[in-house]
Image (cartoon, rainbow, N blue to C red; front, side, top):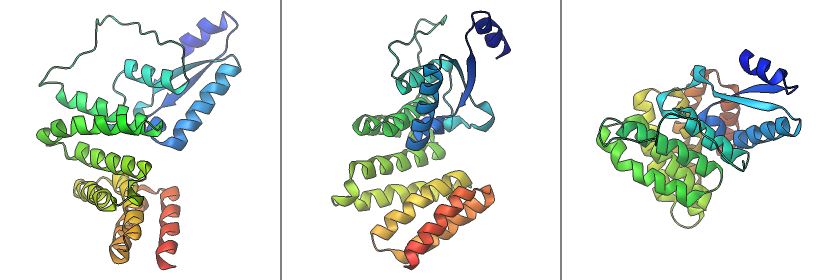
Length: 239
């Protein structure tokens, strides 16, 4: 960062470091916040220096390389052009050794498509990577696919057009896998949505049980925002 500061400073240009994670672009609210921040910096004449926040990522939720990150940020700010300086002729994946990396990359892109409202494209990518993730026995990846598919169906309004059962089944599978894996963050996020779907279907007892498990996960994480959402859902179920 200091190198950038010196280089741009010699030209009288300010710069600012921005650290992004996959979740910053997959979640609609955080996506809009990131977009607003970058747009403001550009309007002020500052050059954003963007890197991935390596301290808070896992394999399933990281960008993986700067080319991918650059492409997503270019879309985020409606850039006129994306220039990639690389010594690789083309990025590529082999059929075996890099199958998991390809599937993870497809999942990241699908989440961005979902956040930007490109629902059919997001679903197509999730469906494309499902056989690979299943064959690899990647349970974390499978939970992510099921959760994402349920989110896409809800965004399409399928819960209001007779497809609540499929959404319920996909979320239940994702939730059960996350519980088996002991991933508190996934349990919390999936659990909040599953509780709402259970409530829509009139399954109050199952919703309360799921909410209890979700609350335990957020308590473990010390996630105050998550606990606040649990409280709101509990009040809804008790009304």
